[in-house]
Structure formats: structure tokens, C-alpha cells
Amino acid sequence: RGQVETRLANLPPCLIGMEACVGAHHLSRKLQVLGHDARLMPAKYVRPYSKGQKNDFRDAEAIAEAVQRPTMKFVATKTADQLDLQALHRVRDRLVGQRTGAINQIRAFLLERGIAVRQGPHSLRFELPGILATRTDVLSPRMLPIIEGLAEDWRRLDERIEGLSGEIETLARQDRACQRLMTVPGIGPIISSAMVAAIGTGDVFSKGRDFGAWLGLVPKQISTGDRTILGSISRRGNRYLRALFVQAAWVVLVKVKCWERYGLNSWIEAAKKRLHHNVLAIALANKLARIAWAVLNKGRAFACVKMEETVSRPA
Image 1 (spheres, one colour):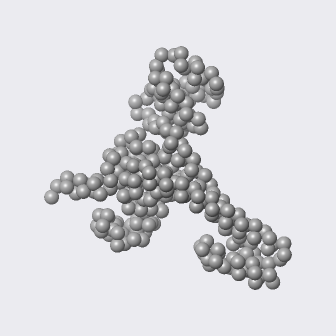
Image 2 (cartoon, rainbow, N blue to C red):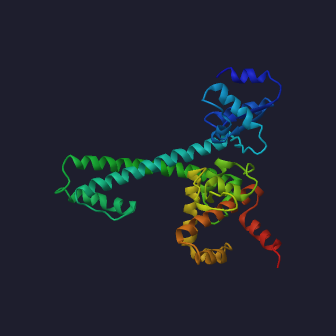
Image 3 (tube, one colour):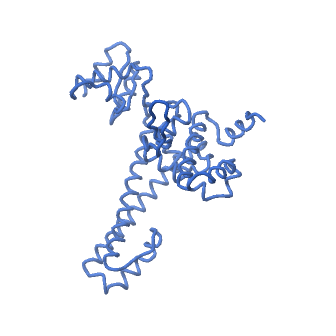
């Protein structure tokens, strides 16, 4: 592994293909500094070019064949800042999952003893001290410290998540691309920074629909012959970012008074007549994702993009 850079430094500039994996972005940046044309590809797009059983020689042959295809879709090389920001999001996402697990475990232990608490973490946080203090008739001396320990884990996770969220928000407020993205309805520091960390300026996509397809927000197509068969959403690509955009769509749908200000009133009202509310949220998430890509790629705020589209629209 340590000899790769030395060997490639002695070669004339050439095309180098790699599968996108851990460490690939770092090596790609190193090779670009040496003058090579380093290109990263998703491993699932390389697999069809592999012949026979798997070994290193056949994998290398498949990569060499795939990187020369004119229709191959490549992965943009992430900068060190993007990887740092992505690491913050991944750690935060892991901690949120652990917090949810702790909350669910507390609820399960209480329910096994016949104590039901209203849904939502706020209700549990408010009622838990009183339950531990008064319900000693059903909570055994052995169970009390277990639940108290889980509650302490919950508090520590809250502190870490709050600290990471504050750091992400500070970085988003200082980044110009994130500032432009936060002009899009429903998008705040978390979504904007996650999007910048994932796709940078969005140059790897030719249009907003490609970005929506990468997120898995477009219908899954199983077409044959002259029949176009569309199913549910494909759920491919970045699951974390897709979930954030769906949450943003629900926020926009709840704030009815903001529809007119953002120019979404007519579209949402027309879509509500023909779509289930869950399907409407997915459709709106796809629309917000396409708007966000246009804002990020064109380098203009949402108001400017919306104004230009209105002006250029024929009467």
C-alpha cells in the first residue's frame, strides 16, 4: 500500500480508475496532484464488467474496462473539508440512533411493568422522574438503577448531539453554498451542510432530476417493450440525505402560510387533489431536492432562481 504513490509518481500522466471506497478519495486527490486523471466509480457499476469468479486480476480488468465507458457515471472526489463535514454528520446520525434505542428500551422496560407513557421523547422525559420516585410498587430495586442508567445515557447523548449540531450549524453559517441552500424552504443548517458534504457543487449531476434519482426519490422503473411500468420510489443512493429531504417536505406541508411566499401554493394544492398525503410528501421532497441542486450548482439564492424562472416563463 505504501508503494502505490511512489510507483504512480514515476508514471506519465494517465487515466486511473478506482472503485469508490474508504481511502479512495484521499488517493484520488494525491493522484490528481501528480497530474493523473483519477476517476472514482461506484462498485455496483463496475460489477457487470467482471467475468468469471472474483480475484484481483479480474477485478482490475473490470475496473479498466468500466472506466473507459462513455456512459459511466463517476463519483466526484471529495475534498478534505467535505470529508470532515461528512464525518460530523455520520457521528451525529449514529448518536441519534443510539438515543432512540435508549428511549425505546426505557419505554419497553416500563411497559413490561404496566407503566405506559405518552408517545414522544418529551413526554417520557417529563414523566420519568416521577415514575422512578413513586412507582416503586411495580419497579423492583434491581430495575430502578437500570432505568436510571439508561436515563443518564440519554442525557449524555443529548449533550453530544447538541454539541455536534451546534458545530454543524456554525460551519453551515460560514459557508456560502450552505447559506444559499438555506434560502430554499424547509432546508436548514443540517440538510444544507449534509448536501454540500455529499455532492460539493453538484457538478457530477447534469440536472436536478439526476440528483433526485440519486437520492432515490423518483419512481422505480420496470419497463419492457413499449410498456412503461412505474412503481414506488427506488430508495437508491444516499439514504441519510433522502430522509432529511423527506423531513423537510413534511415541515413545508405543515406550514401552510408559507406556501404562497415560496411560490408552492398552486403546485401543492393541485397535487393534494390527486395524491395521498404520504405520496405528496415524497413528491415535494423530490421537488425541493431539484430546487436545492439548482441553487447549489448555479450559485444563486432560491429567490433569484424563482424570479428568473418566472420572468423567463412565456405569458
